[in-house]
Length: 629
Image 1 (cartoon, rainbow, N blue to C red):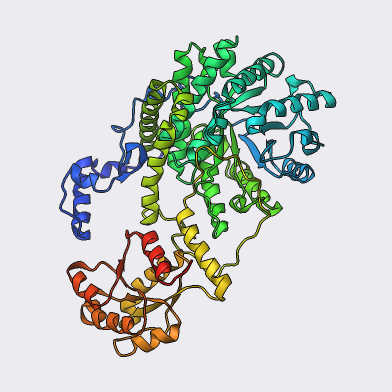
Image 2 (tube, one colour):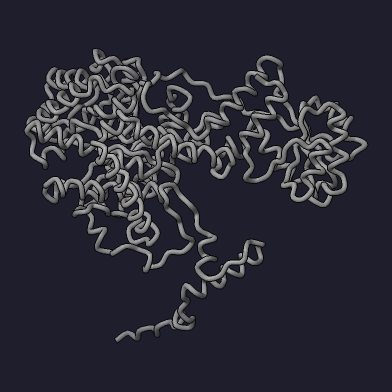
């Protein structure tokens, strides 16, 4: 027999650590950082991060924090937290679905064929208003093998006409409806959310039910209705609000379909749910897992069989998170979002091109979008593991907390009569607007940084130009973006550049040697550029005698003092007074003023900029005083 190697006693040589020991280490770190004195659980609470929906992310999770392990179930079995199918996406990967919004049917067709030839497995095609005309659907899908590539139609209020055109196209090509897959995209409540009008809701619901009956009879692999949660996400809603609205919409459709004669199982089979995937990877993973759990509970209460309770999910990278400035960073955002969608168990994933916020994506952007998913699937092998995040105490706890918060919002909607009533009364709009106001405050104060926009902007970057995209339907819930407040500031700067040949400028009055002022000068430069204001840091250092001359030579309209607190106490008042005398319309000081605020203000300092200040307010005021329209 071969001798077995002795067991390594490495782990046994270390004593087990407990939470109290870890908390004591945290206490020491907090004391050294100058934070308030905190002990025990209070020390741990000092490191928590507040999310929307009342959820707080803790710095440490253990087995004690996770919900009951049986609550997640097994992949492919209720409550479907771990996956909607027993095999997850391990067999063929998730469905790589690319969106097309070009109104020119020929160009849309060329782009669709290129996508299908290079890794895309299904098409998401905008039809009618905001896409190719319904009458040109055949042209847009010319050369597409409809029995091989799934097609998801997105026709808004024109969904019935688009579906009729689809049925005719299949008939003309001799493709049996039973061989096709995808979705017809009927979403009557989504139309109400987008347009604000419920005048045609009854007729739309009746038409959607008719499509569902036909799909159930003739096209079992095609779903008639889409429960699109994107309008609520894109209006600034939180994750739980997005989930709650999707549940309420799904329940409304179940009621309509069963009233039209479909059984509960058949009605569930007609629904596909669409959610946003963001660059917050754990929140996106937890969202998709929570959505399956919540819908499984709804379907169970409605009497669906266990197999019919699985939710079909389509995840789309968020438009709220993408930016118009420095759009190249969107590649990073959409990569993380696409990864999160796949890990979260989405059945179909759409990675929007990095330039989609600027207009119609070009061929390079579409290639990057589809290759992002190809790399995740073929090189990173993300689909080869079912529920990779499963068993993570943090993810399991976050999934549970999201599900509970979303269920509470869903119950509120049902209490007032359902999704249609909640939309009509303004309840949904007001709730989402309140959430967005809070988030806008965090964005304005840069507590939620936006790389390339509020952090690390690059004023000299050449703008990326794209052909304008179709204007989406409006009149209902707004469409918001994280960059919108800074985009407005940058637009003012661009207009000034076009009118005068130069951007509005701010003189950085740095005091003392570089080692002393560099940190705050860098901070101020970054902040000013976020508002389209060009910083001028020449000469490297000034004092009370040289500041006025340097400011005049800079051609700037405002100035910002940059140095250490110690040098501020010695020189800031005199330098600020000199800058004001030289014509500075506004003098900023980089740093918190502390007890010397009144002295600095008497000397001419108008505002203070520091981490956590209202950056949008400060920048807007600076442009105002420089008379930048």
